[in-house]
Amino acid sequence: MSMDLAVCNLVKAYGDRRVLSGLSLSLAVGATLAVTGPSGAGKSTLLQIVGSLDVADTGTVTLGEHQVTGITGDAAAAFRACVVGFIFQDHYLLPQLSAIENILVPAAAAARLKSTPTKIDRARLVDRAQTLLEKVGLGDRASAFPAELSGGERQRIAVARSMMNHPALLLCDEPTGSLDEHTGHTVLDLILHTAQDENASVLMVTHNAQHAARMDRTMRLSDGLLVAV
Ligand code: ADP
Image (cartoon, rainbow, N blue to C red):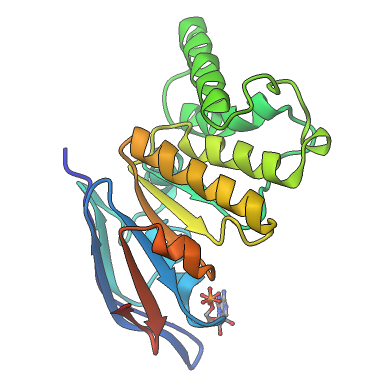
């Protein structure tokens, strides 16, 4: 099943402040796109609408067979848990859960929306989380708590968590914005390698020109529209 992303004519205003003015974009399966632009241009708003965390005034978002526009309730929850993955500037790890338990959180969200997982399912999910830990180079830190990890390691756990339910599209909002340059490069590498490995597309907001250059395409959000860079 094709999971191309198609965003058509999005308009979004907060009060009388128009943020998106008929924005369109398309992203093929497995492709990567950087979105740049000044603070306040609407980059996070775009990601939130694509991820069904916010609602556009008009326009449509489609990801494969998923009509994102207008979904609510459990359908929206299932879309966020199973079809898209999120990585934010902050890691948002739960401090009371170990690294592997944090990676399993999206699986718990998905399980709520399905039948109760069996014991075999649970073993399979733990295997999946451990595989992801290894992919991000932290295979030996499964039982470490966030407070015992560095900022870069925490963000690597967030990368692993975002992939837990095999998302078709990874939505990244300045995922390296809180990291030093070297650590930021490492985390970007992990995002791109993991996404490629799992055939997920990547839509990434970044202020880092070097990081944007690593993506297939870069577009700049300006006056509510995307323009090719
Ligand atoms: P960027 O990510 O490019 O910095 P945002 O998408 O966060 O920009 O914000 C775009 C504009 O919309 C800003 O002026 C911001 O203040 C406004 N905005 C964003 N979210 C809300 C909201 N929930 N309510 C009101 N205004 C908002």
